[in-house]
Amino acid sequence: GIPGKKCGSIIFTAEELSNCRDNATMQLCANKLDKKDFFGKSDPFLVFYRSNEDGTFTICHKTEVIKNNLNPVWQPFTIPVRALCNGDYDRTVKVDVYDWDRDG
Ligand SMILES: *[C@@H]1O[C@H](CO)[C@@H](O)[C@H](O)[C@H]1NC(C)=O
Image (tube, rainbow, N blue to C red; front, side, top):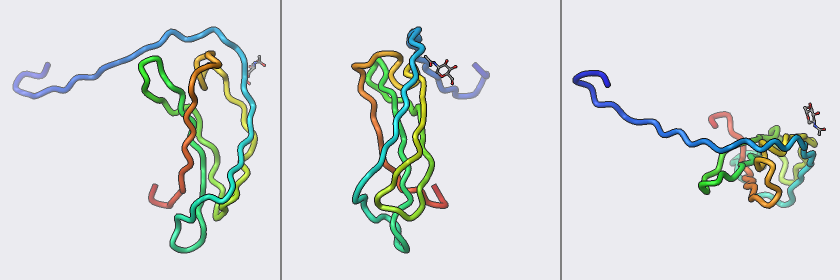
């Protein structure tokens, strides 16, 4: 609302938080990942996304980076079920595998 300026808009979307108090503990590994680095192998890490009621995804967890390894075993971790799927055990969780680089 600044006179003479073009303003954008921000859309907020909210979802009722479940009262689920459970925690989920898991440990993941991967086998035969793609070699993504010119020198060396790959530096893989995992990103977990919760799916929202409107079909979008929100990042809820990142694992540590394991350097130069195509068969990584990540450390076990514990996450509130509310953060992972808002207490809904039937909901999709998306997991992406990324190759870490110094520049992103
Ligand atoms: C889940 O973890 C939180 C934080 O560590 C803890 O306070 C809570 O008691 C745990 N819940 C259950 C059901 O174990």
